Length: 287
Image (cartoon, rainbow, N blue to C red; front, top):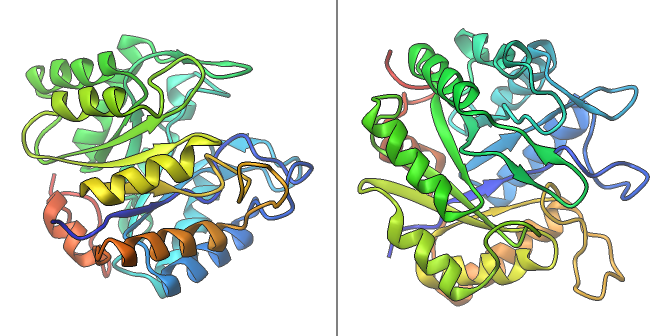
């Protein structure tokens, strides 16, 4: 069984300080949560930027640069992924802004959501032209796509991008279960998604809200990676009596992994498996 990929998602676009004081919003808070996560053990981090004053999602590469720079001072091998989400802003120029970072600030990966979808209170609009343009920019910049899948049709669209030579192997997928309008935290749903993955793929499974612990537990038992953090779930228990910290959620993952005798996949091994440059000043893929 492969070692366990732990994809840490500390912030996201939804949680606000009014909902939980534990969500990291400022660059300094995000950097500190990633530092503590690295001490416990993670393979990669999936970053979202926030405006420090309002706490709203932000797209500016200057904010991402500050976060990435701070992380790489203590974790030069950690695989760093940035968001190009269209949930709060859909203009291609804004979504692609972070992809222009270079040198020691260059992200290794960037999220690519493979279709439009509805969340509880808002849509995420991902037009075919936008998806293809983002994929092309990532390819040109040597940034690997982190393929975001909420339903089976999205995997089919990834195969379409492969045929158009906008993605190259190996591939990395996040399978995100439990969103109200998408695939659920159900063994049959998960099995269909896993079955449809292209050859030469690695994947992590994440669950939204109540589904996070269940999906992460299934992923560990089945031999896949996990996506975990306050981005997807702010509660520690299903009764919602205790707000979680990112460290709470990660510590529980490590406890479950120990029961299943799954060792952590180190960032250096994940880099090798994904065909990424080795870190320490060399990031992303060869162009």
